[in-house]
Image 1 (cartoon, protein in one colour):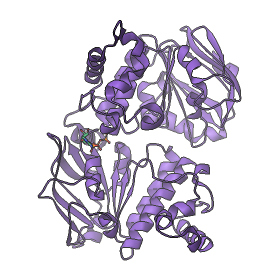
Image 2 (cartoon, rainbow, N blue to C red):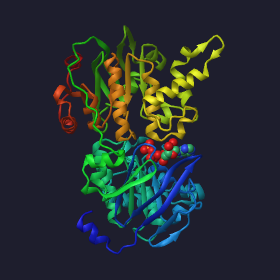
Image 3 (cartoon, helix red, strand yellow):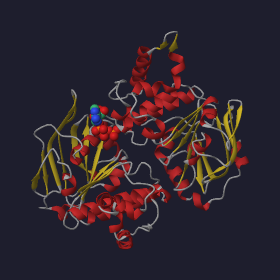
Image 4 (spheres, protein in one colour):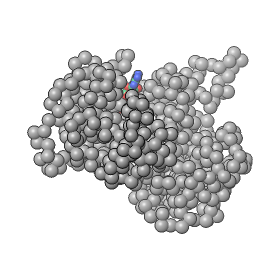
Length: 529
Ligand SMILES: Nc1ncnc2c1ncn2[C@@H]1O[C@H](COP(=O)(O)OP(=O)(O)OP(=O)(O)O)[C@@H](O)[C@H]1O
């Protein structure tokens, strides 16, 4: 903690002081006598492996789960009730921003800001002109250039996140006097490119400077070190410690989170471009992508990256026909597909698998069991004379769960009962078991903890060493540096730079992204080699 921070807070009652928090699901104790204190003006990190209990703690503060008896909650020196009664969090000035932001895309920014009033008042009774002016003034105070009349669906992801945070902050202020209150941000950054993250940090810091407390949940240790004053680490539902963030280095955080030293996965970076081509894209154009061409070779892992709006993240969904391309061809395993007309089933039949970022939407079915989710692409292999063999399917799911360290490894649970990172392990196992010719992934380790990441990276590397070609769209330079043989950098919908071999490092990738907008497009033919 900085001296200025310490001086500012000497003698201040904590915004939040919660103690003896325990929670049991069935016979599993997922929180075990945990405590957490947040001071006024403090940004406090909450870290831990997937399934360590972070969301459960937050859901108890939201009133979604009841804690075990014995828990104590004190806000600004006054005892408050637990279990949290309905509407209690709001009355205490606690507001939440969840990863999915809870905005309504078809409504405007100002309508989303007044969503609570919309639910309780007649729409006509609200003076929208005045509300828009108020919103404009609020955005101006935080130096944000967001149009209150724009529809959420037309805004880039970063502006959506900023709107959700401003809305939560306004809720905090409405419920309490002035800048008091507690803002809880549950992994708000994984969808945001670097530039967006910086803008979000400025907003969070100015909210804390107003005197509110902020809890910031993230798996990104660099982010935690950059933005938080202190951090609390949970390990297997227990308190592993509360530290002053500046005093702990990157490896120190990893050790606190995992409970032991972890060696980060690092693959060798041989040049594999002389190997046979596994997939070739030519003249791909579509939303945010212009005349892109490249090849991926057998066993090669190729990263696609760039700044906000670069188009890199659009490529896998265009190649899988999850979004419609205007033009282009895609050759995989001897089949050439016309990208303007293909359907996802054509891509699948050609040996292509795609794991999108939206894991409980497009990627998996939360209301189905883990066994069902894992089995979907391989059902025909388990069909016998008397129908499907459920015991074999379940055993298969359990064995993949062991390999991919899914916790808890109970295939009968619904996918939605798993923590975010564990759900991602299941979905990766689901596609890798099909041994595709080409596997495409969009932000594959969003929300996955630092230990489990190494397992997923090793699994991807293992699939590549058996010949699968892999395309990874991501804005996480560290992750790309750990696993990719080559990285294609996008700007304005085109490939502007290619990094390979020793140039595939976190710093070089970040640098290439930052200067990407000043570069001209490489000709597709230069890349196709
Ligand atoms: N409704 C539920 N029913 C049964 N078990 C649950 C339920 N919600 C959470 N759990 C279990 O409680 C444990 C803690 O989950 P929690 O979501 O709090 O973890 P987390 O630290 O937020 O993980 P992540 O970083 O992956 O989001 C996990 O083992 C999870 O499977």
